[in-house]
Amino acid sequence: MALASSAEAFFLDSGRNFDFRSRFYSEWAVAATSSLPQTTPARSPFQLIESRFFLNPEFDAKLTPWQPFHLDDLSFRLALWGFYDGIYDYGTSQYERAWDNLQGSLTQGHTDTAPITRTSQKISAWKTYVYQPDPVLGSYGEVPFRINENYLNFVKGPLFVRVGRQAISWGESDTIALLDANNPFNQTLAVPGIFQDVDEARIPLWTLRTTYNLFDTWHALSSGFVEGYLVPGSIDTTVSAFPIPTASPYSPPQADPQALINGLIPPSVKGPIVDQALGGILIGIYDKLPSRSLSNSRFGFRFGTVINRDYTTSLWYYRTFATAPVPVFLPLDLSRAPITTGGKGKGPTQLITEIDHGLEDVFGVATSFFSERLDGIVRTEMEYFLGEPGFVPNINIPFEAELRAPGLKPLLKALGEPATPGSDRGHIPHADFIRFELGFDRFFFWRAINPYNSLTWVTSYVGQWNLTETFTGRNFRFGGQQKATNVGVRLGANAQNLTLQTINKLHTVATDFVDLYPYESFVQTHLQTDYLHGRLTPSITGVVGLDGVYAFPFGLTYRFTDNMLLDLKYILIGGNFYFPFGFFNDRSQLSARVTLLLN
Image 1 (cartoon, helix red, strand yellow):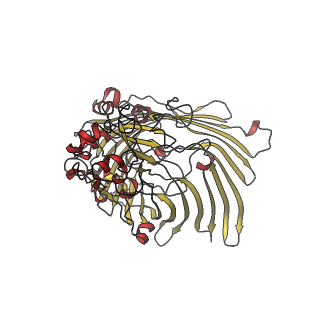
Image 2 (cartoon, one colour; image 1 turned 180 degrees about the horizontal axis):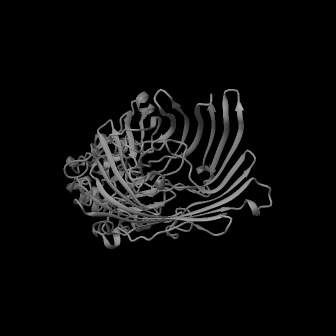
Image 3 (cartoon, helix red, strand yellow; image 1 turned 135 degrees about the vertical axis):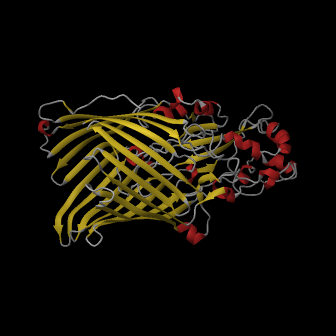
């Protein structure tokens, strides 16, 4: 898998104030099953789907002896993150061909008008999947690596301040990080926690973070502190890169967006309306990135303490961008259509779906404690997500609204098929969710399995309740994903039986989209132990959704030396097409990773 040599710790000075460490791995993965019809391009068992190289050098400096400010501690950290997937250079060529042949428009920008004025920027599949550049520094893709962490620590008495790029995680994130939303996650590798380590998928932000120790003891409370952070929106509004259809083995189950035209446009409509009046139709997906302004700042406050010396408790509030963006129709773009330009424009008309990253507010509380009766640690957490952007098909992407474009109304009226009244674009509904986790962690011995070392067991039950759907009856769906069929995915509209005489009856079919039930939940568990004096570590993780989704990553780690590790993993994933990761139910894989450590 990779050639390796021994490595050892490296300090720049005899006092060990300056420390350099590094981690490098090479990971190769092959498909373990054949893909289902909804996955494009199709793949076969043992087809190479990943050849990832990852480099993470880290530099830490203790600056306290040289600072004139009488601080208790002054330190610095710099960690870089370099990524390269060679599958596009020397692996199967089907994914490179797929993105080269994409006919739909995939762009990004910061305003609603950018895709209409053609000032939006084309999304680069190369920059999304091959090396993933720094999201803040330089222009798009200019810096081919990420400054993963870069901060200064200041400590004076009870006050701790950290300034720079860093990650914050106040919610639980055992495997599927449903309650961990302070920072965005990289979603280009399908499901964080299944196909990519959660900590590696988490994207750090440029942040000002402060912690103040309030008291050692106060009545029944001890170790009290308050914490706050600010991610200035004028500096950093990073969200996950948009997963491009067909461009990756981990792309969502969708075909080229332009392929929608074949099912959406009836033959009797294509010639007289689409070709002649509209100059053709181009399907566009536009990733509307949050603009860099203070109004898009992320921030949070937390109070933590220990109650009765046993119950470690935290309460918090933070504002963040929703982890999952939602699609919404923009008005039909007729700015270059022959019908609105007196024949001067040649088209095409654009049907644009905007990917919107909305802000939400999160209130949370968590308590953990050791239970002597259970001989383990009990973890509880509950968060209230207020105003989360949601997806209701007839509200977000109403096909009937596209017929209400002012430039199209006279034509439909002349055909005797006037457009129905209403808005000419989609809108974003919002929902309130309660999300929670009840977890239990324990070390125990099972001599039949391992006569010498303990087993580590981490398990939890995770759920969410959509309060808005429960109390309003509004039917939310899961992420804008169409349901799977035996030939692909459903269309999402009633276009199959329409004609030129009935085109004004075009509308979105909500039942074509995957449902998101008012109450959803899953169980996740992890079990591991050590053999051969800690050199061999087998593990199994299970995530089972109560709607019938499952994933079982089986892992085996062998430590050749303190500096070289081999990881073998088999990810079995399947079940239906529902929450939380059923879209990827045909993506089982086998992988091997060689890791080199300098520490």
